[in-house]
Amino acid sequence: MTHANPCVIADCSNGDVANDSYNKYKRDVEMMRELGLDFYRFSLSWTRILPTSFPDRINEAGVQYYRNLIDEMLKYNIEPMVTLYHWDLPQRLQDLGGWTNPHVVDWFADYARVAFGLFGDKVKYWITINEPREVCYQGYGAATKAPRLDFKGVAEYMCAKNLLMAHAKAYHIYDEEFRPKYNGSIYISFSAQFYEPESEKYIQAAYESNQFEWGVYTHPIFSETGDFHQVLKEKVAAKSAEQGLFRSRLPEFTPEEVEYVRGSSDFFGLNHYSTYLVYRNESVEDRYDVPSFYDDLGNAHYQPDDWDRGVSSFLKVTPWGFYKLLTQVRNDYNNPPVIITENGYSSYGGLDDDNRISYIRLYLDALLDTIDEGSDIRAYTVWSIMDNFEWMQGYRERFGLYEVDYESSERTRTPRKSAFVYKEIVRSRALDWHYEPDTSVMTIDEGH
Image (cartoon, rainbow, N blue to C red):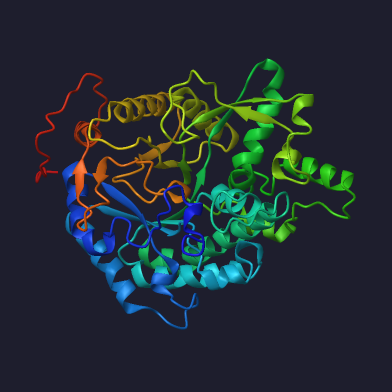
């Protein structure tokens, strides 16, 4: 996508080199040591390991890179947490329909089996797929992530079912073939923002927004019944009938598939950033394309202008929404063990980032409140250790604890103030709201 149409990215950039972690992985591990991290989450690239997309050929240079990174981390007792799929589907498979082709279930399962075989002896935490909503809704229904299919109300639902089946198949392969040998864990990471009713009048509307926006992926795995939520099935079926279609645009799971997907995750992986207010009235009816995901839902959502914000359009500082989301996960799904796999704040750069520090503290505080009330939160991961190619925003929006100089061939990484504060949070296992770090030098605490 970035090569065929570079300026679909805000700054006309691409991810070809990005942070050059391929060559700079030792510096990356040094940063993990500077922060005193217990674990580091990174993703594998499908085609770096399987250049044809299939297991007929394994690229040994790609495998060796990941082995080097994993070994360097383990040397310093830093646990690898490995994501199999963070949106980079091989182009050849995209040409065959990608996540709308049911054969993707087997393609992904084959890739997963190869990865488990190559790295399973050293990797104990596996994430199958990162952010199903961004893959399916943004990439297939809308045009805000690759492959920008823009096939609203149809493609995102096809993608959702196939992606859940692919995840489940990888889970069962690990569970049956590799867990007995390696005793690791495997789960999926959802992006879930929280949808809060604008007033009491819209409590049901907000409930439905949460079920559409993230429940479409979480309910089939974590609910007692499995399957898509009834409200999702009913609303899409009703709209489909109204539009003269012979069947619902939401694909059905067979009873066997419902059971195959249900329970297929050791943890509830959660990427969370912000909250929206929800309302529903006559003005919403003509707002959306027909058919479309949002026409099926029938709600509108927004973020008030007076909420504090990061530079990303979606990111407003609402820690109370994080609290409510974690509470709903606990209540709806019988308190599953949760790993926060992403949470962070965007800026335009600069080393003095008090807004990021405030965000992290506020969200950790909200998380601690839910733990006090019984939520089973196992780990927390800041997005991100360093700046990155932020998809459609390119290198304009910065999420890193470390700033990356993209003008430098060295891609120099420099700790922001937030890195020093996060290091103290990790070291002390406490939130000290008044802690002011000495940012003159970042050192490695060899005693960690």
